[in-house]
Image (cartoon, rainbow over all chains, first blue to last red; front, side, top):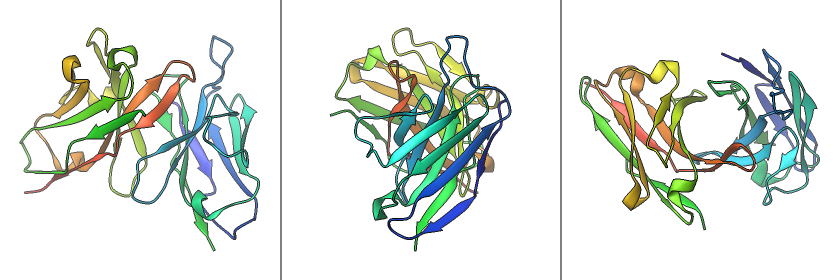
Length: 112
Length: 119
């Protein structure tokens, strides 16, 4: 199985500060279609996960543009340009290139 | 709007079975596959597999091939997860999540069902 490694485990940031979360995969996530199926989701406290980013860098329509994703092959990054209160929760990367789909262990974002 | 509404929490004893539901609304149920994801307490997320909502064919991840059954009631736009011969390690929240063929990812999630297995 593809192992997804996220760092840091947790972040504590003030409102307005930037955030950066790393996600590394044990195998390349570049698929035979030429697409890279690396996704990001956010699980707020007590809630189910919500979609954020698909195929490395594409934001779902409702996601604010302070979020961005980048990377290729095995190294990926989620950035928040300026953290807001509603951004708290656990961020997970997950890959959909190889079966079984696998998730990172999560990065908990706390607001100072 | 698209919604996945799951059934309520369950408390079961080891060896029993449980069947949880995921009712979809706001889209054509048979147009999109349904996936299931497990989240054990304090743990991350684990993909269990998916079911083709057109054919009813399930595909299970290796760890979920033995006691887990995905099924459908398409007339009710509902997917089911049954877990047989429950053990303590099955204590978790189980999410259904809709597959999106455009993004090729999970676009909507149910609220989750907490299953507690305790003697």
